[in-house]
Length: 119
Image (cartoon, rainbow, N blue to C red):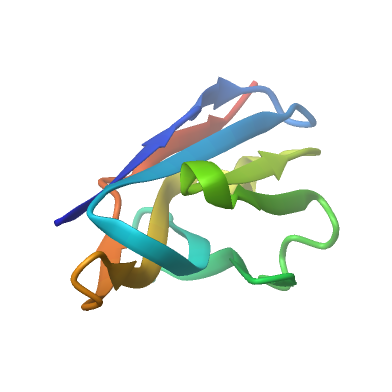
């Protein structure tokens, strides 16, 4: 069983910054792709950013404002969000895939964390 827990969300003013963290724990042998998604009310879940090895990919709306990074030793992924806009308000979800110590593939989601951008 692999658990994924997000932290770092909250309320921030437009133009501000937040740093989200996501830690995976359990019987992990290796992690492969680590990603952040978001879902605003009435909207579909969309990819914010993903990191796999040294490769990163971002949603078009990010436009250089966010940076994803990871610490493999801690099975943790971070999302630094700068120049936040009101339209970035959403529940942010972390997704991690990889292999367990039994060499079974896992694909786990966190519970989500609220990010609210408002003055």
